Picture 1 (cartoon, rainbow, N blue to C red):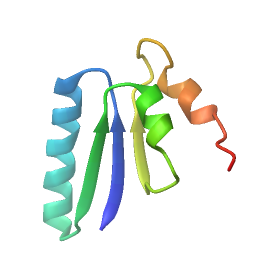
Picture 2 (picture 1 turned 30 degrees about the horizontal axis):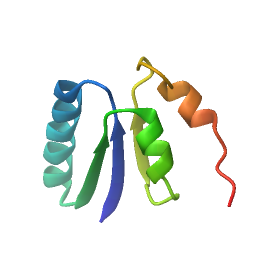
Picture 3 (picture 1 turned 90 degrees about the horizontal axis):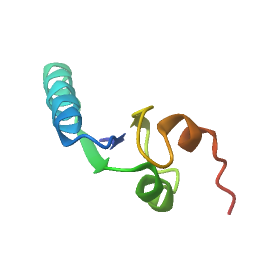
Length: 75
């Protein structure tokens, strides 16, 4: 099972990406577990290095995806 996080402030974009992932994974016979976050802060507070793939929206209010990706979590 591949753990995946999607971080995007637009629910339609999250749903679209989840549909595409489901299609790809079904064709390849791979299982994934997708968790969704609507802002970078909630993702960052939940993150404990448990995802193999993270999709970050670059343009979001508050902390954008680029800034979130640059943060090093210590501890």
